[in-house]
Length: 282
Length: 223
Image 1 (cartoon, each protein chain N blue to C red):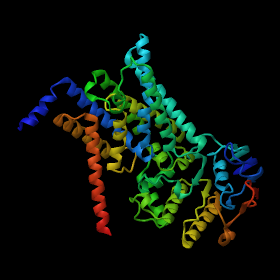
Image 2 (cartoon, rainbow over the protein chains, first blue to last red; image 1 turned 135 degrees about the vertical axis):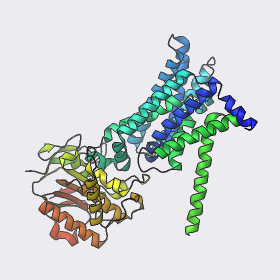
Image 3 (cartoon, each protein chain N blue to C red; image 1 turned 45 degrees about the vertical axis):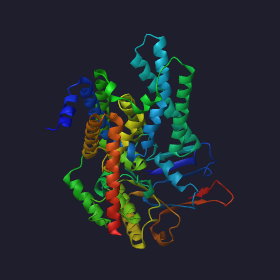
Image 4 (cartoon, helix red, strand yellow; image 1 turned 90 degrees about the vertical axis):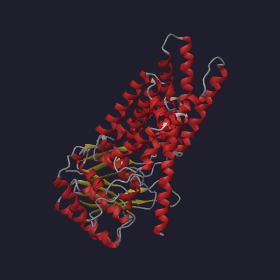
C-alpha cells in the first residue's frame, strides 16, 4: 500500500476525522434529498441568502450569551433562526408587494442583513467572530452533539420528502392544477422555506452557509431527476461528499470547499460532454 | 341543479383597479360556455376566481350550490387546464407521470390505470411519448397532455384557459368534438377561454363576453 494512502487511512483513527466523515455523510445525504426541490423550484439563491441572513442573528446570539446564563449554542441557534425567518419574511413581503423578481428581493435582504452583522461586530469590539466562519464553516471543529443535530435534520428532511413525494411532484410541476385536484399545495408553500432554513441552519457551522447552498444545488444540476426524490441524486451527493473529504485530508485542504470543487469539476465535465454531443448533432 | 353561480362579482388583484364591473350569472345546464375577450381584460382572472385560486374583490361564487371550497379535492369533480406555460419548464417529469397526476393525491395507481393512461395518450395522438419528458413535447402536444391529465378523472366541471391557442386546426376540431361529447354524454359543464370561436359557434351553449374601450381599464361583462 502506498505510504500516502496509509497516512490517509491513519487520519481516520482520530476522533475529529471520524466526526468530520460522519458529518459530511449526513450533510450530503440531507442535501441530496432536498436538492431537487431547491433547484426545480428555482430557489437555489435562497441558500446563499439564508447563509447571510443568519449572520446578525449569530452575532446577537454571541452577545446575549456573554451577558446571560443561557448555553452559548442555544443563544447562537435561536439568534440565527430568528433572523433567518425575519429575513425570509421581509424578502417575501418585498417580493409580493413590489412585484419584483425573487432574486432581486433576496439580494436586497442578503446584503442588508450582512451589513447589519458587520455593523454589530464593529460596534461590539469585544466580540471576536470571523464572518468567514459563518460562510465557510469548519467540519473539523464539530463535536458529537453536532452529529445528533445533523442526524435529526436528515431524518426530518427525508420523512418530509418521502411521505409527501406525490404532493412535491405536483407542486413542483404545476401548482395551480395541483391545488384544484387536492394536492397539499398550501402546506408545501409553508413547509419548503421551513425545511430550507432548517437544513442550512443545521449545516452552517459544519460546512458553512455558502457551502451548504452549493451542496443543495450541485447534485440536481449533475443529474436532472424526474421525481422530487431521486436515489441517483442522493448517491451523487454522497459520492461527492466522500471524494471531497478524502481529497481534503490528502492535500490538507478545507473540507467544505473540497466537496464543492468535486461537484464543480463534475458539472464542468458534464457541460463539456453535452457541448460535444450538441456539436456532433450539428 | 346549479353548476356555477356568481353574484355581483368583481375580479382583480388587491390594490389594483378592478378588471370588471360587478356582474351576476348562473349556469345550470351542461354544455360548452365560451369566455371571450381581448388580451388583458381579465378572462383568466375570472376563471381563477371561479376556481377559488384568487379571492374575488367583491361578490360571491358558488360551485354546486356551495361557496367555493377553501381546500379543493378531486371528489369535487372540478378539473382545470391552465396555459401550458404554467408547467415548470425545469422539471422533466415523464408524460405518463404527468397525466397520472390527474387521478389526484389519494389514488393508488393500478395496472388498469396505466392502461387507461396509455389509452388516453393514444386517443390524443401521444402514443409512444409516455416515457418522454413533458418538455420534449411541442406546444400542441403539451396542451393535449394537459387535457388528458384533466379529463382522466372524469370531472363534472372543466375549466380550460386558451386550449385552442397552440393546437392546429385538426386538433382544435378533435378537442371541440371531445368536449362536445363530454358535455352531451357525461353532462360535463365546460368553461373555455379564447379570443374567438368563429369556427365553433355550433358547439357553444353560451357566451360570456368581455368588452372594454381602449382607454378604460375595467371591462363590462355580459352573458
